[in-house]
Length: 132
Image 1 (cartoon, helix red, strand yellow):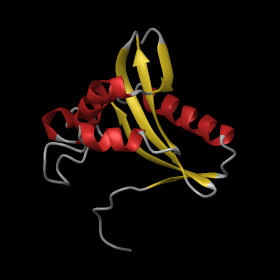
Image 2 (image 1 turned 90 degrees about the horizontal axis):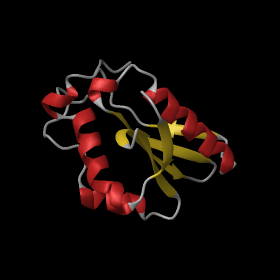
Image 3 (image 1 turned 120 degrees about the horizontal axis):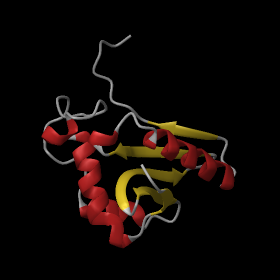
């Protein structure tokens, strides 16, 4: 990785982010990484352009994109809630997972949380194990 850059995404980034998120979570490409839902949830798509466009225009939301030499390698959705920040769709290109990109995105999310003066980050995960 040469030049990592993390900044807010724009509407022009939506097609690339859709492709990244879907490759990280679903389908055969997702199986290259270790954080996929490919065997847990049916379907090839985790999101689509319409959903991301809707998320991106929410007043309290942002999508951070991570690029390496201008190539999209990761993204994360963040939305300010009452006192905290919701974090979703943390995505890293499957062939680049476990190289620190996710950690950098989480660090950027934490900084975003501090800038908004939020006191916590909330995340939802899928549970497929037995209910405890």
